[in-house]
Picture 1 (cartoon, rainbow, N blue to C red):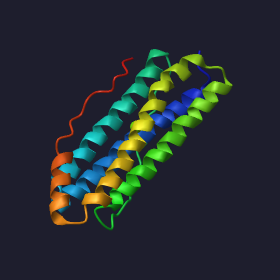
Picture 2 (cartoon, rainbow, N blue to C red):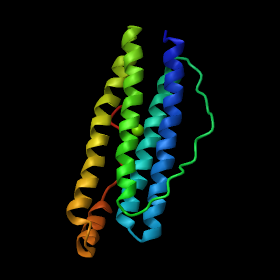
Picture 3 (cartoon, rainbow, N blue to C red):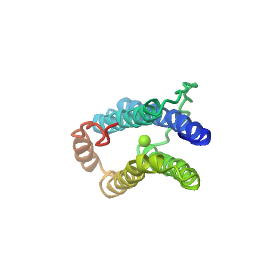
Picture 4 (cartoon, helix red, strand yellow):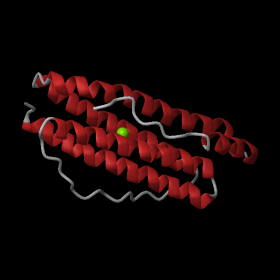
Length: 170
Ligand code: MG
């Protein structure tokens, strides 16, 4: 049995993951508009990852016999001033998601909900990776993104990213 509080938090997390997908798709759209198809690709893949995260949380509730809620997904309202702005926003967003998952972990810990803690372990590690990737994108942009040639090569590198399904299987 999973406490109502945890079920509610996980339902909210599903919505946050879908919002993340929508936010990253919005960033992909920004880069598509600028003709930076590598950055567009990178964020499109990121959006796919976020949907996969949402589906894992969903499956966890289903597997344990709890109802999944489907409230409206917020609209990304970001207007980006320049090509670096989405990268900064992406890092901020991942830090927010990390805090959100940490909150569920904390609650599960208080309630001695070992099943949920074990499920969340994968996400705790995953958030480390997400923040690292976001920081790497900013660092690379700072190093190479300021001249046209550097930006061209960076964009080409990001064009190679492909979606791989999460290693966690439920
Ligand atoms: Mg996520």
